[in-house]
Image 1 (cartoon, one colour):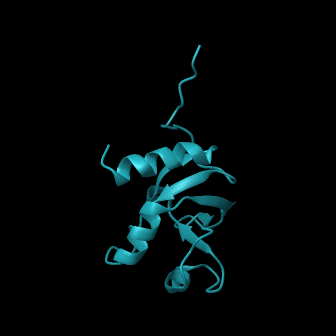
Image 2 (cartoon, one colour):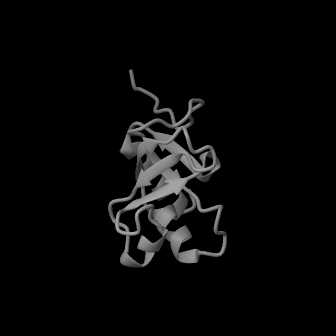
Length: 106
C-alpha cells in the first residue's frame, strides 16, 4: 500500500519545521521575493513575546545582498509574520516538490 503525502497542514508551524515564505511587509523587493520563492528555510525560533513577527527563519544560501534583511545584519536569519509563511512541513522534500511545481507551473 502506498502512503499519501500530506501537503496541507492545519496546525501552526513549529521550531524545526521547514518553510516556504513570501515577502508581504516590503512588497517592492523583487530580489527578496525571488530568493524566497526559490529557497526553503527552517524555523529556528518561535518568539511568542513578539506578536507581529513571531518566527525567526534561517536560510542557508542567502546571498550577500540580502543580509540587510537579516535579524542580526550578519546572520542568515529573517523574521516573518504568520501570514508570510505559505507552506510548512517537517520534511524538506515535501517543500522541494512544491517549489519545483511552482517553478514549472505544474
